Length: 140
Image 1 (cartoon, rainbow, N blue to C red):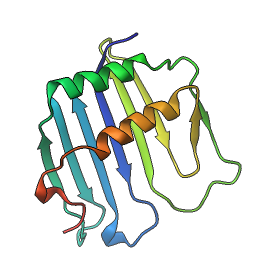
Image 2 (cartoon, one colour):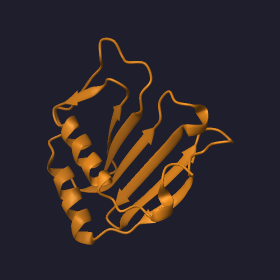
Image 3 (spheres, one colour):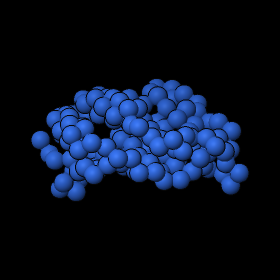
Image 4 (cartoon, rainbow, N blue to C red):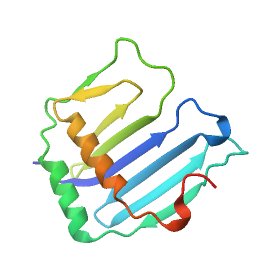
């Protein structure tokens, strides 16, 4: 089991109106999390900015322990035969204490086998349960 020091989640919108397109990044460390978001155009309706998210140490330790326990040696990216048009893109990056990184990029229609879906599921659940600051909604 390798020690995990950081987990990075990124999300970007797919084919929607330019003023509604976003790019988000949530960096989770053993000290807490930071959400950074921006719009894709100068006239964006996206609520851009950076927000720090305080988290209990026990919750962070449990999350990093669960990530470290996932066997990543057999992860394989599975491309769709016919990729769908549009759709959001997500990526999940695990940063290990030795400096190595594992990135899973979920373009529309892409799945992973061998532990990749477990990492994505764990990351999505953790992020879904974050208590974001009141002023951190996606749109203004």
